[in-house]
Image (tube, rainbow, N blue to C red; front, side):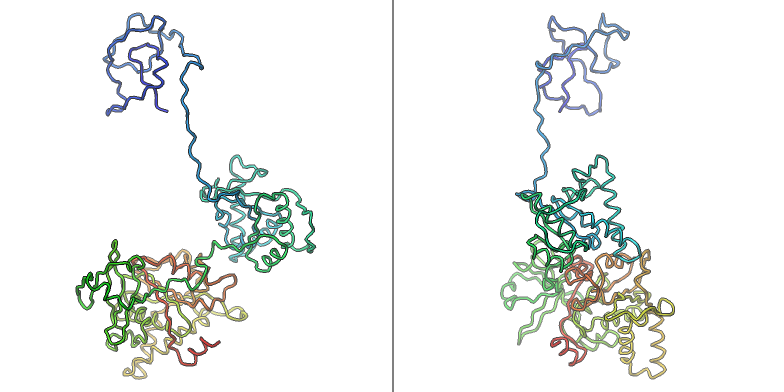
Length: 560
């Protein structure tokens, strides 16, 4: 509410109408007091009052004003005579649903999968059964990812319970620790909940106790929807068999369907030139031709996305989107790495997608490249050939660092002897196979020359374990992350944030060969990276489609 204006005369009483008058604008000189206005006739009932304005040098003392602390009493109009101002309450944030908020009962595996899941349910409330807290306590020991998540969840629960004014009976406010996206409350099981209808399930198992709690809550709050959230498929099946509402935890999934993953390339319509030929601007710079296009196709394009047009009997167009400005986009033609004169360490592109991949790998302005595709499409070979060329020939990077997720296909063979690089040796069979192939590309060097080249190559390739990556910074390195589909989004973030100035990171993987438990195509770290980095001017992605390993491998990928 604005302050009322100061009295026009010293020791004057404010009239009731002054409370409704608009506040005076502040002077430019800050808190300087305006000069005295012309004197106005006072009411005969007016008495001396406290001075609202500090005395200045130009003010003259009024005669009869006492100089000591004995001032006449302050006269204020009675409360019923003072004008009342209506204060409007601050508008509350609109609820995102029309009906009452839901009550989500979380299973233990959800908390151990994502400790931040407590703040992912927006305005809805969360209920944690006592058996869930018991299971969190039993899984908190150890150095595994599950144990770390369990400890992180316990710390978050303790922080919510430790906020000022927290009352466990009325629930803890989920936004009390700074997570403003969650406006619901967190409830704990503080008493024994017994459902009237027996579920006829053995009560010694934790899953059955959680199902009993869901049934009891459903009977206690019939006007509210109670939903069980679990990552356990069998538990969701049992809940549906008992007539309970249940759902999977979907927030960790980048995509619901793997087919919706950004492919990195877009086929232009057959009538592209007929529709855009009159408005296309073209110019040439060096060995590349640039096209500026406009039209309905532009909103669907992304920076560093490849476009191609292959029409029988006409020259094909292979280009990359380099600029998007408003309703126009600039396309830049590619370097043809399928020609022998443009071979990269003796390797040429055998299909369109491999040519796209080599254009990304050889571009110094691209800092992050993701390659996906089935087995035998040449992901590791292309990345390694491009790395050797830029490390040994162009001297753009100092060395190649290669790592991968150590997730075995079958049973674990146990501990491996030796140093870090020797322990990683059995996991790097793909590196040895590709180095053997690349060593045979130089046919004129002779046996001694190939041996010397092999030693030089291996001296510039370092094999590192992901377990010791935290805290490191790679300067001017060419980093290859193989089998990235087995990484979680958190692990992917840890690896990518190791990049320092002048470093390039290549992530490769096949989303159809995920060996890590609890990971799917939608929640893989590789899917997470592809989706988050698309459209960034210094990153690129391409999905390799055709296998080039052998006819046997191609047929096995399709038939098996």
